[in-house]
Image 1 (tube, rainbow, N blue to C red):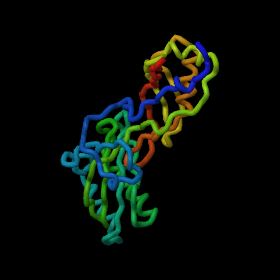
Image 2 (tube, rainbow, N blue to C red):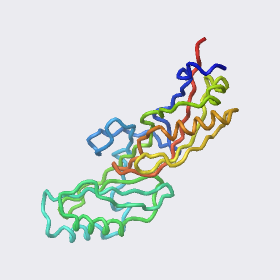
Image 3 (spheres, rainbow, N blue to C red):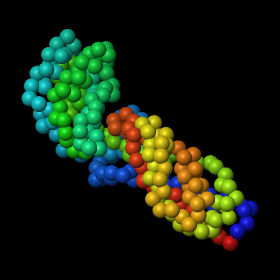
Image 4 (cartoon, one colour):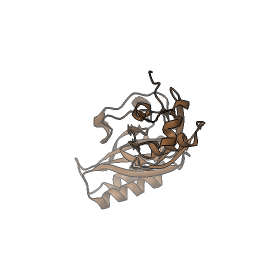
Length: 237
């Protein structure tokens, strides 16, 4: 086929595609819940009224230890911690997401909570723990944002790919994309190849040159895998 007008054949990278592990529908958090989620497709790890209390996920005595930790503090001294259980259900982190006390107090509280929590729970799950002075004031569901496409790649296909674009007209091809905690592409795999090696390589290059939003857990970036698709337009002649 002629190579002129190749721009008409440029594919579309699906936006808002599902990540590998899709979650059941839950109420959507307000952007004020966690910084960095404005404009993102995010969800609560649990419906807010079904979040387990601290006693259900931590060993006995944790509240008393938190009270001892906060003996020298007073309202409004506050620390909010993010708890994450990873894709294998193992406790991955206890990280501060906001605090009004010094870093040493924050680190000590994080270590205390980490040591008291159950080592395993549901996969891809977590809570936010709000501590005011020495009191566990609230346990809320974590906010999870799945990775998603931000902007498509801008590359010029080579002449071999343009010649074969007629083979993929009006078709979509699923891809699996590895992302780091900042949303940078670290791997691309075609889940269904075209009949053209040149077009296959163009799809890989196109995805590598696209940009993505990373997966977030309470505003903290995570490595993730995104499954989406590249769709080639149907051309009117």
